[in-house]
Image 1 (cartoon, rainbow, N blue to C red):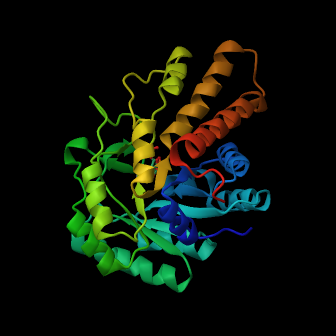
Image 2 (cartoon, helix red, strand yellow; image 1 turned 135 degrees about the vertical axis):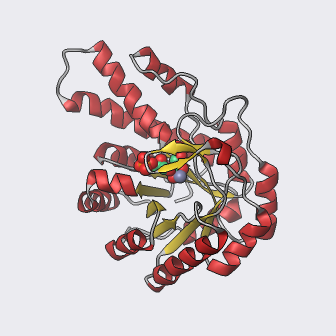
Length: 309
Ligand code: G3H
Ligand code: 13P
Ligand code: ZN
């Protein structure tokens, strides 16, 4: 089936209380691992690319690889721009056939964020494309996404409602305690489910998005460290909390860090155990498999989207 928007996926997931995984992609093996898992689980899936991923892979390469993923599967796949920072990048992706874009005005003032989001919504909707927007800042550091953790602020439910009413955005990313990257919590992991509940009360029909939602899977961190990596004290959002978020109204859960860890851990293992290997296929095959099994675990055991295609 051709690429779809997230509209129907989210309508069904909100009715049946599960979440759709949105997985970040940079290269062919990551794309293949994700869609193979989603196909075998018969699950809808969102493939998302950040601006730096687009820069890395090249716009045309990325687009064509995703076309290949669509051509070789039968599940609903949405192609989403992750953290678009400007109207221009959103327009470029919309014009190129992305079915969903995120305009991330969360670093702007409320009014500026409203104005920018409105501009993107107007253009996107005229082309049949849906828009995710964000209010409230997330802590954490990713290449192009950098907010110091002491600046982290939670989403104000009242403001969330006003923002959706004013912009007409199709889904909303909120800040309830998650953050990007591998170091999300210093002590215990904690999410503000009370804020999620208030947002859902005010916006019962708006799909809610959780960024920075990797588990930072301990086995993968240990494996990286065991085979020469240095990622001490990494910590993410436990599966249990993501399960709770999925049933309590989060419709889209973003995962990048766990895929990075899965790929890196499996490549490190091959390099450490088989130093004679220099054929990239010998380490990229297990890496692709690790991506696939990580995605499968999330879809099947955490987000609950198996057999919802
Ligand atoms: O939220 C950010 C994503 O993990 C993408 O990160 O900009 O390094 O590709 P990136
Ligand atoms: P993680 O860093 O927790 O994987 O979050 C990814 C994300 O939010 C992409 O937008
Ligand atoms: Zn994000």
